[in-house]
Length: 307
Image 1 (tube, one colour):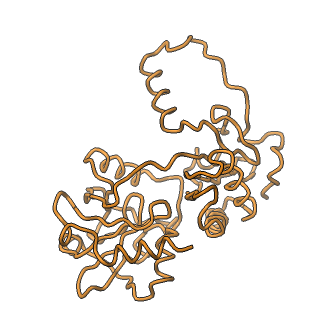
Image 2 (cartoon, one colour):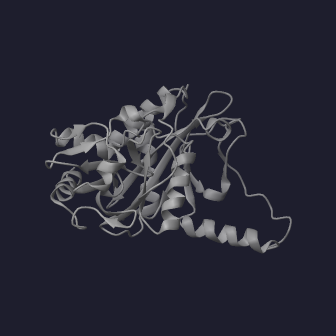
Image 3 (cartoon, one colour):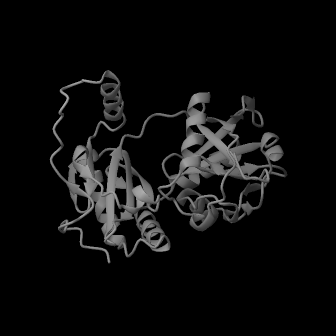
């Protein structure tokens, strides 16, 4: 059973406790000091939402038997905050609640998720912009935990470059379509993209079919100006942006897309809830189409800008 958001019961796996003392003195290990500085730079807001309360991120404690930590069994959603309000908050709450149930974590009320997103966004950004990531997991006693972390929305180019990575997509297995905490393949693909100096990495399955990007769903204009996207049966996450464009643009076709079609495509478009629609104008260093944003990418941008 899930518990109310207005308190943390005894024995909770996630608590706000005083930070442990540094027994070695400040910067005893220069490498460790550098890692701490890098961590602080990545989350300069230094707060989190833990089961109904805001706390310094250093005080967040997870039990060793927490499912996300010990089994990789957790789920998350990441919301864009605009002028202090989360876009598509009801969809985020519904998806996280549904995913928690599908993973066997237990009951997670949608109202609890909405409250968490709103409280953390208000504390972190006020009337400003940013990102809130909410994750659900459970401890060994079967208690469902909800933890949120805010971060800034950094600048990125309007047009993306991408690479095809040599990391076969696993197909999602039992967690197909869900945004789960166990995401090694996506993390490695994201590392490859950063090392290549591009914004996205595209993944194929073992048969050479496009599945998704490391942080986005992909749509392709392959021929006759028809917009296509891989079916979720291949293992892609059911992203909110993907869901929205399929609802609002019924002419989109779901079918398998090969690597050859990608390379010869007129347009490739990445969509996610944080960035909206981003045209991928270069793949593996070569231009896609005429190397500029096309008509479909502009249309999908407009579609995703509408609430």
